[in-house]
Length: 298
Image 1 (cartoon, rainbow, N blue to C red):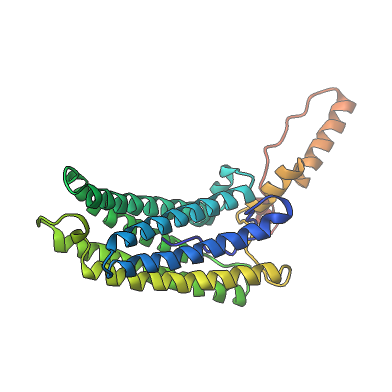
Image 2 (image 1 turned 30 degrees about the horizontal axis):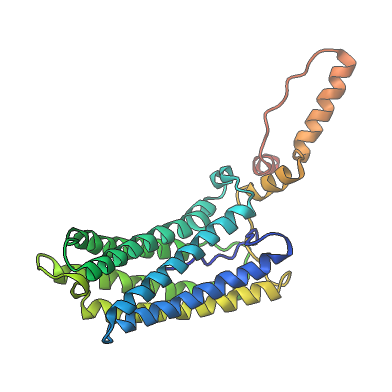
């Protein structure tokens, strides 16, 4: 249910000059999804609880779209070069893993709600779906909690204090919301374990109220995310954002420009000159990372 909150500068949410507009749409769509989610849980307390299930399905579908967009936006920022994850571990554990895990968790919860909705509509003949629905309603929030933990474990080496405050204002509500959803799912599963309830009776009051609390926390986090995106877009060049680490940034720039690092260019030029004078092929040196060269000079 959480979305990615990253302070990286290589994100690309859309083509050309429209990338900023698409990032605003991403943040606004997630904020709208949290409002629909809150209304869906609140509708479970009304006389028409099935309408609440429809709202929950709509909200979960929007959250899946937002997380997939986050994943594509950050992979497009590195030209889909997954090999760079070997050099920057946070790229794999945060920018890649968080939206993927959150999308999978939202998909499981979507299927769980859908199975309950089908059983409620058909009444009979779909009781086997209820067991799967309860399991999915537990597995989904657990994945959200895992993604929230990954989202919170970001390392800041270059970002200034203002960016870190904006990040925490998003991550803390998201983590608390994931804890609320996970607790509600576990309590709901424990309450109905071994009992013969069907349809909407599988969703206890505790699940509904904790769901409302979690949705409200997601709304707070989504609102803080809109502010963060606005600040990052308006203060371009004034806020220091995080780059790729471990030499991944330099490798990405060199691959985009189609150039070799300067050290390799010097070796290539010297070897080519020696071959022309002596007529004997000179063995090529193995590439040496910049970090190793600097450490060797000290």
